[in-house]
Image 1 (cartoon, one colour):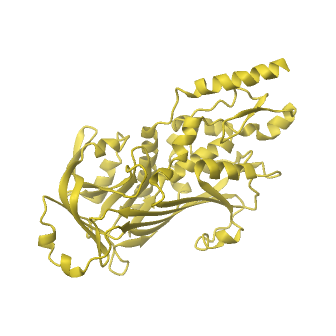
Image 2 (image 1 turned 90 degrees about the vertical axis):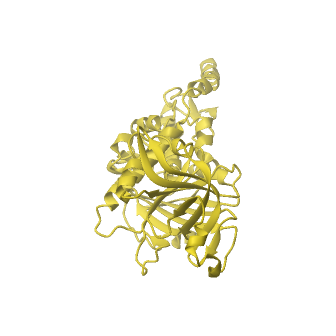
Image 3 (image 1 turned 120 degrees about the vertical axis):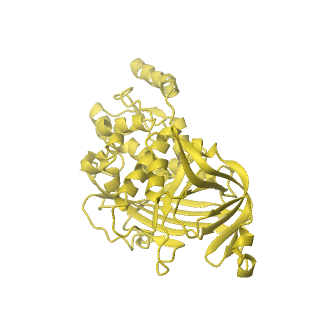
Length: 420
C-alpha cells in the first residue's frame, strides 16, 4: 500500500511542476493557421475557375487536435503535441494511476496491469493551462456572437460517454453520431459513405459590426475612425496593401476583430497571399501593432458565406506538423470508442463546414443616402472592397478564428456571397 500511496502523492506534486514551463505558444498556432491556409490556397489557385469564397476555421481544427491528442496513438501524437506547445506526462505513472483526459486529475486504479493497459491508460495528460487555452476558443466571443462547434462521426462506432462529456464540458464541442435524427439535416449535402472514421466539424458564426455600418441593398457602408494602414512590414520587407481592422461588438473581451486586406496597386492577389502568409510570419500581432486610427470610409460586401471543404487532403501535405499521419496511417484510438471498437482505425476524411454571417447594428439605410460615391468617400482614407478581391481574418489577441479569401464573381454567382 505504501508504494501506491507514494506514487499517488508524487503525481500530485510533480504534475504541475512538469507542465509549468511548457505553455501553449500563440505563435505556433498562428504558424499552423497560415500553413493550412497557404496549402489550401495553393491548390485552389491552380484551378481554371477559382472559387469565389475560401474559408477555414483554424481555431476549430486546433480544438479538435487537442481532443485527438488525448485519445490517439501515443507514438504519433506526442511529436504533434510538441509542435503545438503541449506537454504530456504519459510515461510518468504508467502502471499505477489513471489520468483523465479533460480534468487532469489522478486517482488510484485497483485493476491489474493488463486491465490498465486495455482500459483508460491510453489517455494523455493535458495540463490545466492547455485546457484553458483551447477551451476558451470561441467562448471569449461572448453571448452576442454565436459560434457552435460540432464533432460528428460516422462508421458505425459507438462513442464512449466519457469522451463526449470531456469534449463538451472542456472544449465546448458537441459530439454527435451521424445516425441521430438531429444530424440528418446537417449532413444532407455531403453524402459520404466509407468504412473508416469520418469527422465533420460544423461551425456557425454570426458576428456584429459596429453602429457605423449601414445595410444598403447587398453592401455595407461605414464612415468612422478605424485602425488602418497603407503598408505593413512583414519580416524585412514592406508590403504595399490596404488593411483596415473592424471591431466586432458585443464580445466579452472587446478584443475580437476582423482584418480586411486588399492588394495595392499593380499587385496580384496571389502575390499578396504569398507575402501575408510568408514563412517568416509567425504572429498577426505584428500587423495589428502597425495600424493607426484614421477616418476611413469603408464599403464592403455583405458577408454571408457557406464554406465546405475536406481539409484532410490539405492537412496531408503539412508533413512538418505530423498531423498528416492521422490520414495516412491506421491509428489505435483508445478511450474514444466503446468496446469492441477500440482498435486500429484510419481517418478517411475531415470535412469542415462553416456558416458565417456578419450583421450590422446600425440597420438598413435607403439607397439615396449613398447614391453619390464621391461624397461618401470624402474621407482621409478609403477602403472599398465591394468590387475587389480581399483577404479577411477574424481574430482576437491570441486566436485566429477564421481565415478567408473573397473573390468577386459574376453577377450570376452574386459577388457578395459564395458557396465552396
